[in-house]
Image: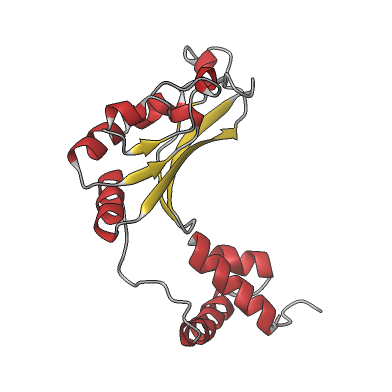
Length: 192
């Protein structure tokens, strides 16, 4: 196609753009760049496809926006849902040589420069919260404590949170609301 030629989205592309937008909150500008079309084409495609999805029972609740970890815990408690937490690391460029906290970026797990974030999802896999980043050397459980998760679970509604071994110890601090796999030393002879 020559300069100024219009690109059209076939139905599968319109559906894909809509699903990516709904699932990941990807902006129309980014989607337009990915698909090589104008922003208005993406806006129109999403406006056409969302009602089709809604007719088939695939809807997103309008107006539900959870901005803080406290709102997420209240949402899970109100709806009686199980939450899932996990930390994830994102590899970053090594900080400048003169930076005093340079060593904090080195992840003990992966031995690389990284930043870490904690993600909370519901049982269906919908992301409800993504924390601000922390240095890669910060342990998952420490990050959760710094975010106030222990206090929110201890003082808030009855919520069950599933977590990996990086959060062992939170269960005792939250009255059993955080469920982790058994400690490796207890796999064979677990205490009563």
